[in-house]
Length: 156
Image 1: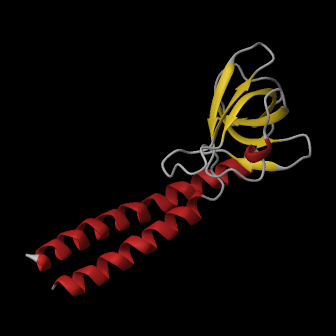
Image 2: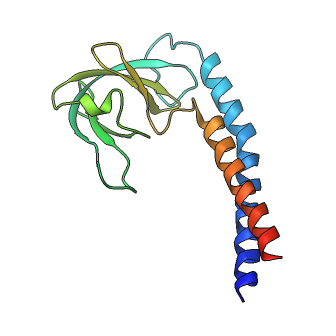
């Protein structure tokens, strides 16, 4: 029975690892598209592939320290008062220092804030930011496939 559980875990890990590996190419293409994106000539009326810098005021920022499943997040306000909710992969270097009423600049690409810059000029990718995803996917695929192979050999 124990062997069957290990073989099942191995198959699940291998399938997940292969699926994650197939995401690497898409993540690479998205990152290349972002890096090659031109600056918008004017404020885009709808989501577009050009880069637009937008001034925001921080309404609130939550670090969710100590909570494993909760990502750091911030609510940013446009000058018009409309709010944008943004999540981040980690708290540093910008989110950890955000306070209500701070001024930040958001980099918008395809209708999403992909990067936030504070008054000191420090930048931080949001969860929607494409930079770094290929490396994350590669690491995940490598870990899953490695575990899957070891579990398969052990189970068999």
